[in-house]
Length: 97
Image (tube, rainbow, N blue to C red; front, side):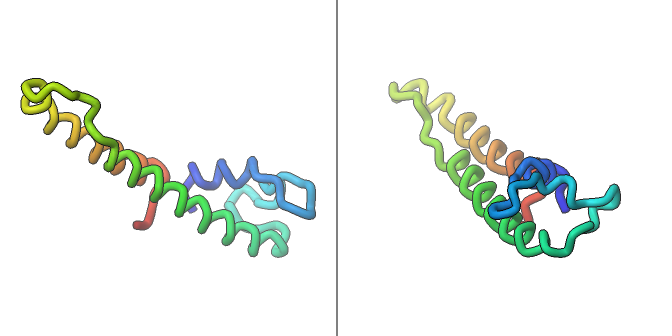
């Protein structure tokens, strides 16, 4: 379990329980209350989709430079920065995709 996603989940309040999920794990990251397992799986899947979408948006962000001369000299740098931003997002969250 990635620590960044885990931190988000620990702040998540379980619907119909009204409690923070963080109190349902022991220090080894194991469930204290097995009833939370379904919520963890749903949260983890949703978090993965959000991570993938954020990375996709970072990579697809168009270069804001509009004049052709500057675009020719700096556009590649922008494109590479966007690709690296997408990779960094996935790496930070330990994305599997």
